Amino acid sequence: MSTAKLLGKRTHQMPGRLNVSELFFEVPKDHSNPQNGSLRLFARSAERFENPVDPSKKEVKQHPWFLYLQGGPGLPCKSPQSYAWTDFLLEKGYQVLFLDQRGTGLSSTITARTLASEGGPVTQANLLKNFRADSIVKDCEMIRKTLTADFPEEKKKWSIMGQSFGGFCAVNYLSRFAEGLQEVFTVGGLPPLVKDPHFVYNNLFRKVKQRNKVYYQKYTEDIHRVKDIVRYIQKENVRLPSGGKLSVLRFRQLGMYFGFHGSIDSVHEMITRFTSDLNQFGFFTRPTLAAFDAMIPFDTMPLYALVHEPCYARGVAPGWAADRSMSQFPEFTRVPVDGPEPILFTGEMIFRDMFKDFDELHGLLDTADLLANAQDWPELYDEAQLANNEVPVYSATYLEDMYVDFAFAKDTASKIKGCKTFITNILYHDALNQQTDELMKQLFALRDDTID
Image (cartoon, rainbow, N blue to C red; front, side, top):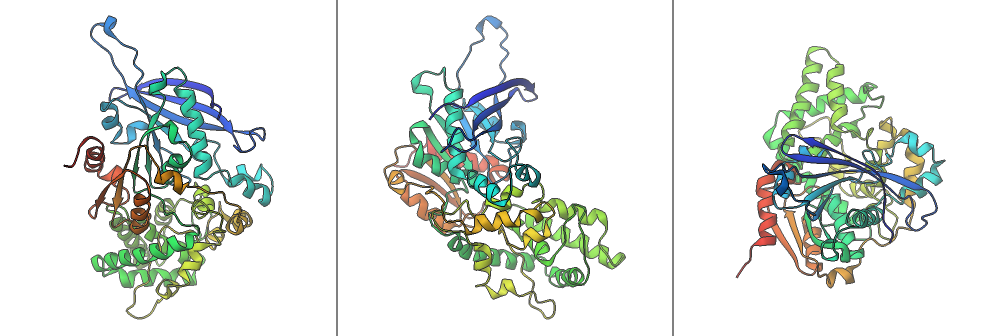
């Protein structure tokens, strides 16, 4: 595999003794056909700014690289100084790369308009098949070779950390290019080694049901409040500031927050806003609708909706797996506006009807259907390679994870030779950002400590 072309680099000093560089790379649009156009990728790197009292003692150091793979699919990285764990890694002696994965952030951003510029639905779907973990990992390997071109051979490998979907990428990396890896960390990101995402959603619906129970036990008053809100949505044509429609399905997607630290309370705050508006005015005010809009931002990250199910697929059509799974759970298909039974919120699931509700997704339904029905998805993981793995792997796995099912994650860990796991029932999926100190301490204890 060749190197990525470095198009430009600018470095700026930031508060906290950080040198942050902004880098642009060029990689093939389709790695299997490098002549078929290119993509521009954006990344930021962070290293410790050093200013010794005696300038003559300033050394030029080649700190080992540490790549962060963001969750998603379809989410960009924030700036290095936005992550509490950046300092932790810099103090360990790494320099850290934060990559906007292809199609996200500033990396050849996928939107309805940029897709339309490529052609019709068939062309768009064929393009989007190159935005899964396998292509992202090939981008990363090309970038690694570029960044370490002048490193001695023993320092060319890098460490990687994958959060959520970033962990899916990390396991793909282990399968395909283990020779480029020094060590691997995953946080809530061991992928299910299944062919059909339908099996994933069957488990996740059960977990979402549990989280609904926790929500309504804490906020019992929201049982009738949610029913009042749903009744209003059913009888009114509520338009959102983003241009989309507030449907019952879209409203129920607030449940995708149920698996984060403190976010059950955020959902309650949103319900309180809706209820307050109805009680005072008999309609939803623009500030309330704008606040709701911001909570489920598929309009600004359509890639998330388009490739969420395909990111699991291994030779099998995703087939709108979340819709197929929900049909097996009548408690989710029902919307009981009368009686004591609560209306259940859904979780991190992509439903076909979403493409009718979100303004940015509205014109992409044909493309999404093509992806949902495609069967020519290449293999993502080499289980034989994983069974013979020699790269150190350290994984944080959450029993209460609502997004990456624990049973599947445990099974995957057992299939990666030498994988050490930290298993906990007191941390949620976003612990890397919300419980940073505890999580990083436990991850690096796996790396640095020993058990007799």
